[in-house]
Image (cartoon, rainbow, N blue to C red; front, side):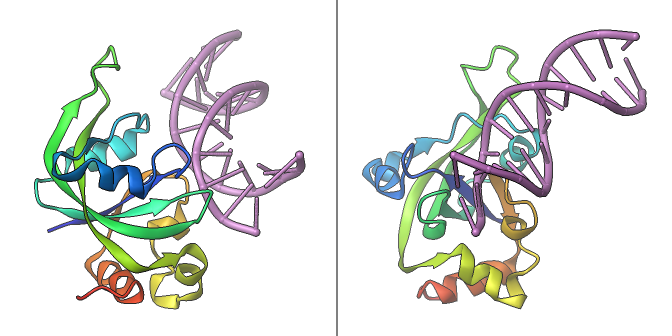
Length: 139
DNA sequence: GCCAACGTTGGC
DNA sequence: GCCAACGTTGGC
């Protein structure tokens, strides 16, 4: 199963907001980047990803799971863009900061480092395991 | 608050 | 269809 990373500014949509949505989850709308959109179209129910706080915090703070596959965004007249629905699964015992990720040579190839502006990005199995370990989660 | 990197727009 | 100009994102 593929893994992902979702960025959100905590001032707009934070991890706590996500947790408050519970099992129903949130429609991850507002993405208007073709590559991020493509990534979401490739997702399947049950796939997990990291929840990352950009700007403030700059850290991976939790794990989310896809509960519904990609659906078109009603606010996009052309129907080009859409989103998946995500629910919070587990919080990291300790957040993994961008500085830590950058400091680790094994994580130097992460999209988060290479293309910091992409809002929905793939994470490799190795990176997934590494960041989970740094965050204090079980493998 | 600044600025680099990237994506998008629009003129040709 | 190309590419310069512009706007936005996000780290610092």
